[in-house]
Length: 432
Image (cartoon, rainbow, N blue to C red; front, side, top):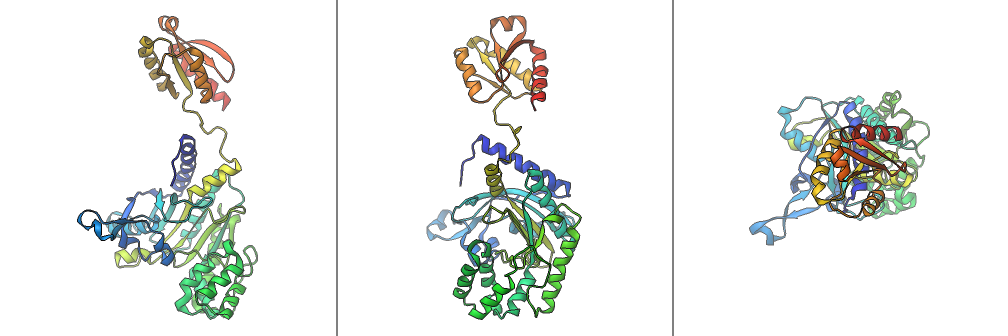
């Protein structure tokens, strides 16, 4: 968990602003949920490994000494969404499209781009089984990443039912499917040998492990072909669903990015259909992922509600953009456009009035609070990257003017106080 200094926050707000704007262009509405959920709401939704990463909150008051937990910090934004839809169903439209950008918490081992407190940028659609939903979600996240400057990412696509059919076809016992998928999900991190060793440790036979890795041996990017012979009817239908999504995305921003990857598993246990994940060549792990989870809302509501979602990982996006120098040069890195310097403590009242006028003109203004030597004040402004210093001495106050030093242009001009704001804005505009 980290502190965020001003430059960090400016970058975060820039990225979030871009993502929010794209999500809203696709008709998604904002939603927020509490940081804390009932523990029973979260348990059993993420698989055994996910359960171990939930930050539990001990009971309070007279029950504190028991060491038991009844609340927890939210693990993701999807399960809280399912709870909200179940609780507020009467107030929500039949087709509910929402986005949510909030922090989540996981008791994970920190690594590059991986933290215990991090933001997710989720976009979900509930109420339709149509593959158009998956196509629009992929298009929205692709457009958001492109707007941020990413060009070398791919959206890997697979289907949980297709995975299950492949497992059956290579003779992995159904009781071991969930455990096997957890291992397969690590293929891009620990390689085929590592996955094979983990499959064997989880009770999968040597022959089944070899068959499974053989089915996934063809890495993404080739022809869209069935990964293994002998698929059952469920697997065939799932494969057709994958092909439909690829066809629907062809004319969208996601089209050139879509790749069928039969080895993609995704570890969360609530997925029921298509699953997606964003890969970037030089990043271990992904920038985001998602999938269809048609049964999750039903756990809270008692009736099926089709749902599909995608989540972008804000922290990883920020890490990659920072390392690649992708933030725009025009992104504000200074606290103000102009600093007002004060010579005499008695003149502060005039400085505050002029500061108000400049702010109303559209400038960000910092008033230096102490009557230090002018050289010290200018040095402070220069050190903070503030481009202009406004000087208000007794002569300026009497004349109703302000002397403006342009630190970047190394010039100095005198303006009427009422005209200074427009003049400074014009210079800033031309500098971009």
